[in-house]
Length: 102
Image (cartoon, rainbow, N blue to C red; front, side, top):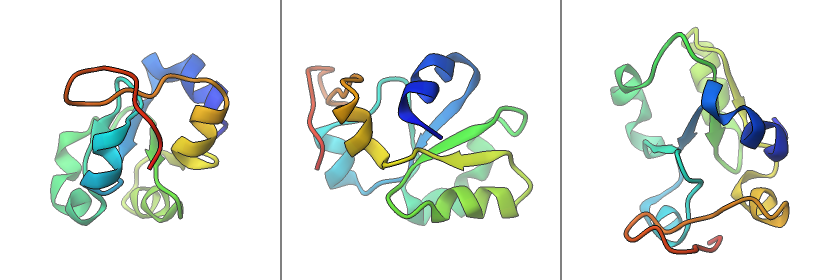
């Protein structure tokens, strides 16, 4: 799913950041929920099954995994790197200051 579309529809989507802690700590999409890739199978119940999900993942495998589990899911096209290139906000989770892409 295109970053601009995700940004415009973020109030109706669940943005699930599945990147590693080192990547997330330097920058995240505001409003995204962080569930590391390795923890996603055990933490599926933390997301709303009735709302479409968009995963922040380089490979797109986690969106495929969610779809295989019966969820409506898509991957953020180009990941957070393209999100940032589109001049969409990236913030540090620790203090909500401007972040960067790892």
